[in-house]
Amino acid sequence: MNDYTDGEFLICRTARVIEDNSTVFVGFGLPQVSAMLAEMLYTPNMIQLFEFGAVGPQSMIPYLRGTMGGPSNCYRSVKWCSMTEAFSYAAAGYIDIGILGAVEIDRYGNINSTMLGNNYELPNARFPGSGGGSEVASYCWRTVITLKHEKRRFVEKLSFLTSPGYLSGGGSRESAGLPTGTGPYMVVTSEAIFDFETEDKQMRLIAVKKGRTVKDVTDEMGFVPKISGNVKAIEEPTKDELYTLRNLIDPYGMVSRGKG
Picture 1: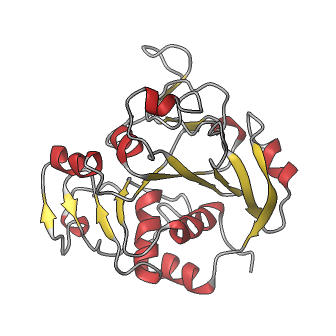
Picture 2 (picture 1 turned 45 degrees about the vertical axis):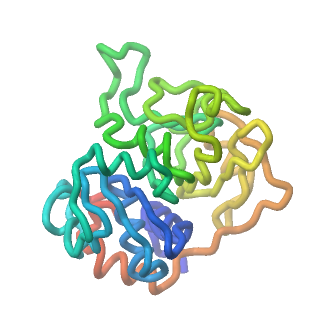
């Protein structure tokens, strides 16, 4: 099976990273669609948390862009609180996994979702910014970062540091006052999977899409990551995943096929 888009591959693979019986702080767009797919197929006992304050919702389908705070994303919530309280759950250590997108990422898992260019006042492009991204990346025990695999996104130096990864590596995250044991857990792209299981906390390539090579992946990056001694092949999306995504969750292709 190879009749799928990069977006569909990315969503399906991100969904498989989420664990059942976990609490998950979900970002907008692709992270949310991935969480919806996971909940429908793999993680019926997960508890989602949205930054606007919905705790434990079972988002209604189909996914609709631009309706994050609307009733479809609050359906069957066990609680609806303030943004401050929602973020406090992460700060208190209650959130297992955070899922975030990124405009740019560096070798230590630091994220830019704010702007591109060298001048903040006159950027080449401006994006929504942190939202709750900085709190998610700062306090969730594990952060999963999901993005399309493009060379322009993997950079040595971010245009703007929006949300912290391992900062400059090693113990710099803890030295900055962030909780010990938190930080980037995995980077899932449309071509590969990375972790940070290195002493200096640099990104490490651990798996590539079936049919691709390590060189194919690293050639499309602005820096050379660490390479695992046992790089595995990532299986293609299953028929159940694609059916659920295309027919139930995102039939309009807003996220999975970029039509939104």
